[in-house]
Each structure stands twice: as C-alpha cells, then as structure tokens.
Amino acid sequence: MEMLFSKSRSLTHFLQYYTKKYAVQQRCFESIKAGELQLDNYNEDDQQTLNFPGGRIPITTRMKFISESFEKRLPCYRVLDDDGDLIPGSIFEQVKKGLAVNMYSTMVALQIMDTIFYEAQRQGRLSFYLTSTGEEAINIASAAALTSDDIVLPQYREPGVLLWRGFTLEEFADQLFGNKNDYGKGRQMPIHYGSNKLNYFTVSSPLATQLPQAAGVAYSLKMDKKEACVVVYFGDGSTSEGDFHAGLNFAAVMESPVIFLCRNNGWAISTPVTEQFRSDGIAIKGQAYGIRSIRVDGNDALAVYSAIRAARQMAIKEQRPILVEAMTYRVSHHSTSDDSTKYRCVKEIEQWRTEKNPITRFRKWIQRNDWWGDQNETELRGNIRKQVVEAIQTAEKVEKPPLRDLFGDVYDKIPSNLQEQERFIRDSTKRYPKEYPFNVPV
Ligand SMILES: Cc1ncc(C[n+]2csc(CCOP(=O)(O)OP(=O)(O)O)c2C)c(N)n1
Ligand SMILES: [Mg+2]
Image (cartoon, rainbow, N blue to C red; front, side, top):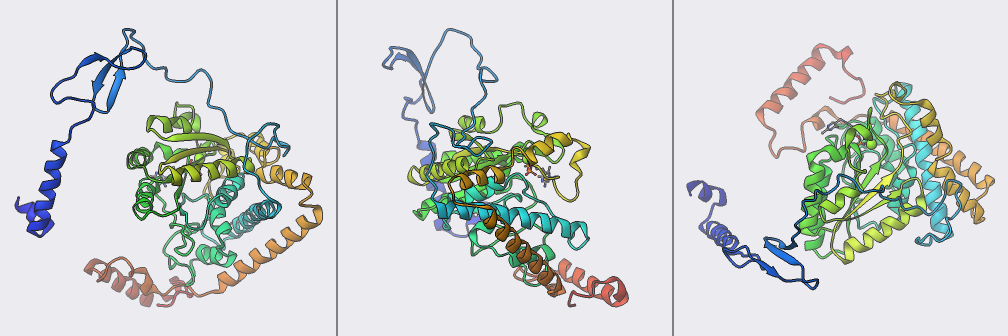
C-alpha cells in the first residue's frame, strides 16, 4: 500500500485506482450467468452452443483440427496487368490525369534520388544508404491515397511517402550528410528521416517498434475524434517481431483507426520469406486478430491506391484497424552494407527490375491514356537529376552540428555520466586534433 501511495502521490489517486480495480472485478460477461457454464439450445439453426466468456460457441461431436492452411492461397488484388493494361472487370478508384501524372513523376523522382544517393555512398561521400528500388508504387500510391492529416509511422524503405508530402531533396540530403540543417542534428544514421511538419515519425532502427506505437497514436486520434488515421509501414521480416503481434492485437481490441501496411518484398536481408514464416504470407494473420485484411499487388500503383483509399475510409468511418499486405520484391541489395547476389539468383532480380517494374507498368497506363510522352519523360528525368545533384553538392558543404548537440535534447539536465563523456571527447579533440573531423565545430 505504501508503494501505491508513493506512486500515485495522493489519496485521491489511490482511491481512484481502487474504485477502478473494484469495478473491473465486478464485471460480468453478458453471455454468462455467474458461476455456471451451461449447455442449451440457442441459435436459429437449433444448434447446441456453449456459453464461454466472450460469447456463445457452437459445439460439435467431430474431433476436427483446424487446417494449417487453406486449400487455395489468398488471392492478390490487381487492376493493371504486367503490361499496364486495365484488367477487364476490375473494380478500382478512378484516378484523374493530374493525380496520375503526379504519382508517376514522384515515382521517377524517388528512383532517381535513390540512384544518385546510392552512387554518392559508393563514392565514399555518405556513410550508408538504402534504396526503395522495386517498391516505388507502394511508396507513392499509398501516400497519394492519404491526406496530410494522416500520421505516418515508417520502417525505412518508404522515403517516397515523405517525398510525396513535400520533403525537399535538400532536406533528404541534409539528413544523409548529417549536417547542421538535419532535424536529427546528425545523431542518426542516414535514411532515418522524420518530419514533424509532415506528420511523419522519425525512422527508428529496431524493427517493428513502430507497430504498437501506431496502435497508440491511432487511439489518440480516436479520442480526439479526428477525421484521420495512422498508416504504419513494415516489412515481411518485421512480422517475426513480437511487436507486430502486440500492435495488431492492441489495435483490434482498442478499435484504433490504423492501416497496417506490410511490404512483403520476399526478403529480410538474406532471409527469404520461406524461412520467415509458414503461413500464407501476412494478410491471413489479420483474421486471427479480428482485423479486416487484404492482399494487394504492390507493383500495381492503381491497386495500391484503391486498396489504401478503401482501407482509410473503413479505418476512419468504422474506427477499426485494417491490414494490407502489398506483394512486391526488394530489387536492391538490402542496403549498402549488403551484396544480395551472394544469396539470391541474379536472374530473379533482373526479372523484377525489368519485366515486373512498377514504374514502367504505370507509365504504360498513363501513356495509353495520352497523358504522357517521351518528351515529358526526358524533361522530367533531366530536371530531377539536376536537382538531386545540386542538393548533394549543397548539403555536403554545410557545416556539421556542433559537438554540444551530441549531448542535448534527451534529459532536462544533463546527467553526470554524459557530462563526463563530453569532457572526455573535448580533451581528446585537443590532444589529437588531426584525428578529429575538421568540419564539426567544437
Ligand atoms: C529488432 C531488430 N532485429 C534485427 C535487426 C537487423 N535488421 C535490420 S533490417 C532487417 C531486415 C528487415 O526485413 P523486412 O522487415 O522484411 O524489411 P525490408 O528490409 O525487406 O524492407 C534486419 C533483420 C533490427 N534492425 N532490429
Ligand atoms: Mg522484406
């Protein structure tokens, strides 16, 4: 009791705590009369049911185990075929010329940004990089289906969502170079972007931590009665983390308006999905948590756009989570620290890079609509290339954040161990000035 008092600090808190606890103990499930578990004739089919906490369950005399899989695999929702033609009879959200061209142009911008930043890393100008190659449609089409009030919790392969929301190439470059304009003050690895202004949480390295957080953020939107939802992105590999399960269950029970968007790209660094799980992918897992789910072709921008629009509508109107599994392929190496040709077939990578390319597929569709031509393509690519190169050249020259920024922003008052570390690093810079980066103000 003493502990409780010191935690809650006041008698009022203590009483509130006990009143709540007592109320919970008094709660009784509607389907159960206290103390009995009865068998009775109940439902319309005259089938016998059992009363259990949580509801009535039909009984059977057959000892039947649920199968570990369905006879057929869960189908994948698609609108455009591999050649960018509309599949007859497909149901999808209409996309007008302006939006379609904007989506296409941003996919191309993401592709070019990735190519040039990747090369800059190979030249030794950046410490690390990671591309979204092959997953441009998931990035851009999902972003296009949202509004700017929707809150994004990313993994790390979704910079296209930020690009769509207006993060500038300079802002990307500032983060990558960790210069003094970087919102994280150079304290994070490259690609850990974030933007308060654009409702985009900062990328965090430990996988899947964003999932339970997303359930909580969405619950706060619900409490504030906001006309918005949360979208949380994650990879197939991240679903092996406990946080995936906690996040889904939490959101289902709390009826949080959140879209769980899994990019199933076949790989988690060198681990293929066949070694990651034995289920038919991810969407199927939603049902076990009581979450409405869909599997969609992640390389079909129109299908992704339509599915996320529908998911958003349901999440907000019905105040519930939705799980979307977007099927795709990680065309790039995992990151600049990886060589994927060591563990997968080059032919397979090439096929996804060319024949199943989501950008080419969407381009074919907009060209058939007479919304795009070769001239537009040349101009767009030239312009973006120039802008990315300029952004790199500028960001590279900007001064790094001062040494003192390494120790701030976490504690209200810097604790003694950090003060000691600061003294130590300052001493070292004096003793070994040549070993210390010249462009970090001390
Ligand atoms: C908790 C945790 N475990 C392991 C890692 C190391 N790690 C970084 S990325 C990655 C693969 C993740 O794969 P996936 O979620 O499928 O995303 P993808 O890279 O394919 O987009 C791993 C294992 C980590 N960052 N965090
Ligand atoms: Mg993956």
